[in-house]
Image 1 (cartoon, one colour):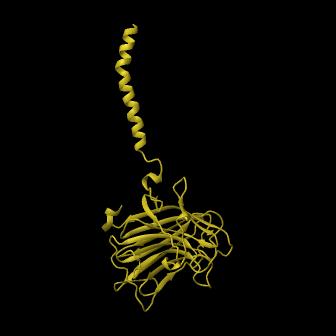
Image 2: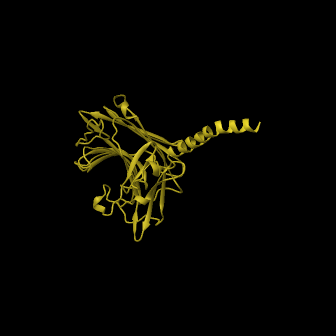
Image 3: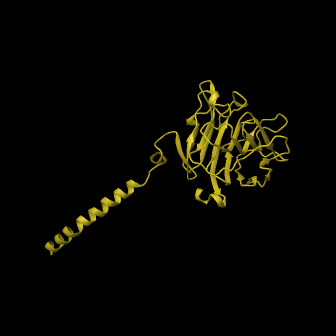
Length: 278
């Protein structure tokens, strides 16, 4: 009987060891963290896309004339993107990321809320979509959703939809009749860029809703009637997304406190002509 048991063990033990060995190897092939995907500390994975952090040591290097640091951009344990505005030594820095791919016509959506309270009156949060042809972002048309204080007669950090041409140095801006502000309640924003129109919409869990459409007229898009025209050229494969939190027109927050913004989701839904961009 003992001989039979030894025979059985001698037959099955090697097979059992192989199973254990392959199971252990299989576990090690699964990425344990985002860092295994992206060993470069300047890169992060958010909502299924790779993004690159932007750090500006000189204000002249910034598109919005504000300073940013890589350490002010991070991910939490639930996959949310966290942007912070913090003081480092005697200077305040924000955070900025750029999507590491090119997209096209379609709908771009974001979900965002504050960690606590509202957005400081001197800060600006922007979701920008640029039609780019090079890495310098100059002479390009851009549009998106922004919370900022660019006009003194408006509430601080009121939502605005903007359409801007860097080479023409002006912007067209549309704001809701009722101020739409950031808070601890999550809000959802969409920008749809299509061949003949651009569509903007915003809603919050509290029930507030706003939408606006910019139509294409004679080859140009207009948010408001203006003498100058803005051209949003066919963007197939040329659209970049930038998310930024910073101080564009001030040296410090009005209340001198750190700011933290939580972005839970980014989603791109391609137009029928750009289905390969899913």
